[in-house]
Image 1: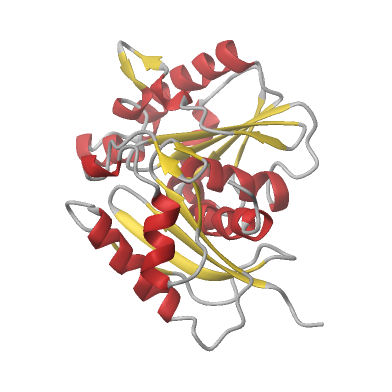
Image 2 (image 1 turned 60 degrees about the horizontal axis):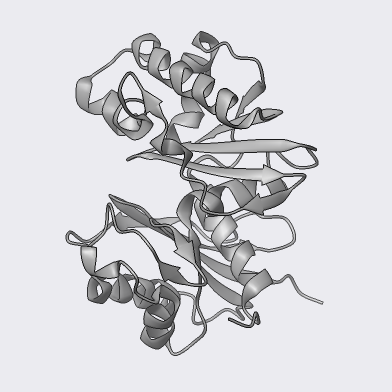
Length: 254
């Protein structure tokens, strides 16, 4: 029996990535493809990106198609629209994308997708108790797990850091825009970690996003009660988690 494959698409506020994922190992079996997220990120524009991504894997036998989407997602519908066009709010995202490719598409919050990859295959595999996965990118995405089970749509990035939401202090985009040193930026990340600890009392905090590849440069500046570790999948986590979630939920009753 051959390997089971699924398409994972990770739509972010500034960039969209996709690849084919081996569902047994969580590894990418094709090169990651990245392109800018259209601005404005309208339903029409994002549907075109999803259709183009899926068409690129037409020569493969696909189990499922999953999309990590930058919004609170409930039963396939977007309840928020912050870094995407406002008309997405309360829209059935799964229906829009499924019509675009004439095939079932399963949608999950992008932070939850990244967390799922880490808890199933990565730095959080086998960890009991509460695990928080943080994605430091354009904003601050988070996901919360209890004994390996996802508690969806936990928008912990809204916790306050020096009077502002964490996304306006601790995001990697803030570090780049303000040209902060690793140590200066890490001070705000540490304040956010302390707020996470007070809010959730997790056993483990996993730091993800592209900045996790440089964890040696900033993670030593952070001290906290729970264990803290860089993510294994880094910028691939959203792709892997979206593919896995889709494979497990394609046949669900909505």
